[in-house]
Image (tube, rainbow over all chains, first blue to last red; front, side, top):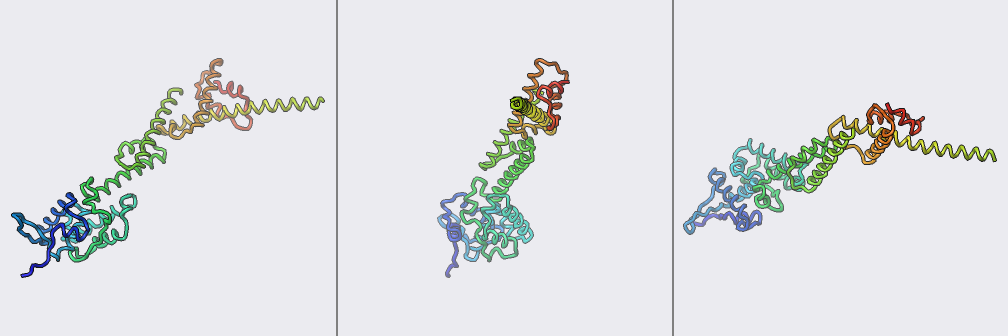
Amino acid sequence: MAKSQSYSFSDAIRLHFGIPLAKHEALRSDVDYLFKAMNKAKVISLESEFIVQKNSWRIPAEHMLAVRNAVLIQGLFPEPKVVIKLFTSKVERRQYAQWARELLLEPKSVVGLALIHQDLLDFLGLLDSDADLKSCELPNPFPDALPQIGLAHYGGNLLRALATQTAALSVGDNMLLHYLSGDLEQAVACANQLETDNALLLQYCSLILREYEQAKEFDELLDLIR
Amino acid sequence: MRILISLLLIATCCAQAKADNAESELLVKGCSEVAAIYDRQGQRHLYAGFTTSVSEALRAGYCKGVIDQYRRTEHCSNTWTEQAKRIAIQADDYLPSFNQLLSRSCG
């Protein structure tokens, strides 16, 4: 009997994204964990092959779109249980989709701006719809690299990276707002809270701290000669 | 000839008055800065240092220097900042002479 076509995990990733799984350990373990969890939750059904005393899992052709979509969704929501929920619960899928939309389309975020292009809009649109994730093909919103690879620093979690950056930017915004409205003490309070690698923000920060020192010196001098 | 001499006298006189007037103006301006800076210091903590420009601070320093110098020989019972405030409220139009400004503001 001819066996229907099936693919190994690394075949699937190479076919869909052109990425050699063997070279990306973080992605390999993410994908492995995700696909097995989906299999366990019966979102997809993997075939197992016993090769050299080891179980090897294969993806049947009919589940190839589902795993592609799952990997893309995992780029936003790294936890397999969330990915599974997006496949199984319409209500939760809508909530997650809207959250992703808010964070990714947040105009303040620089990374967010770089990501806004048609594929992302289409991706979010399809995510926030009733389209069947097992049969429709989500466009790839990550043209350069899957977040599972590129954002190892943030545990491969794009939304966490964005949220961190947005938070840093908003502390930075507050700092500058206070500074511009002449409230140096509040600006300094924000500057002290600021945790960022953003060169421009760091520059503003040191400017504000310097002005603060000068203003303090001036104040002390005024008291001294009064 | 007489006319020429009187014209010359008037000219020197005016030049003197003008120079004196410029000094008075500088003093009034400087002392106004003193008043303004202390006013801003009272408004909000560190606000004075944040908003005072370098030239405003220099003018204020000039006012303090002049008043300090005056007080080396004259006794005033008000503080130097009070004296500066009195100098600051002089109208621009009929400015008293430099010495008058100082003696009248010494309380």
